[in-house]
Length: 306
Image (cartoon, rainbow, N blue to C red; front, top):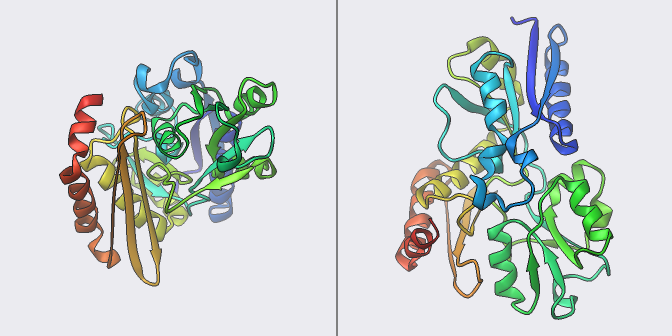
């Protein structure tokens, strides 16, 4: 067994929380293994003056960490799965996903008002086309503004009055003990989250058996199945942060239900698909949902945005 395991992570407070969480789990499963963090700054952390969709997508949060893995400066990297591109980097694999946290979005407003109560013209901050699409569909009278930066930066901008409300992921807020700031949780069936939102993934080098054995105890089987379903739909729809795409899979009463939507950035067109079936049929169910959306015109929307 390896005596030392190095974890590559971004330096943001949330990323460090996630890396420390993984490190703690590894130490509890392998008391004899020394676990260390390698904090790094990524291009996604540096370029904050432009929307992610314009500068290369959420993969910008991973490149430096993945380089550290490929050059064997680190053994694993810890990511928010919604930041991980659908196409894996050659030589690397996300082999383990942890038990999923709250997958939904949260509306934070200075007034404490929910979505329906916000006055017309209220300034709402989000950098996500998925969130913008759904928000404009529900409240076309609101003013949407781009919002970048880590959680603390975004919340400070809200509290400083730059926005009347902002939308963030529930999981990040809860992990940092900020859930009391949530004015309203946005969830199904009206509002769908990003594929794999709330899920932490552990990436390693393909074929590194020693590392693979160390991280396997952290794998959550149900989350892995839901991740497989959501990423399959997103992959079939060529999903990226340039496309307003939402996918949510849940297992209830031994049944897998997959819901998905594709929309136009202005929220005027919102295509929805849903299917339910046996978890063992995850791949075929994912394909059916994706094909349903394509038959409704999703391909035209996606090609117009690419």
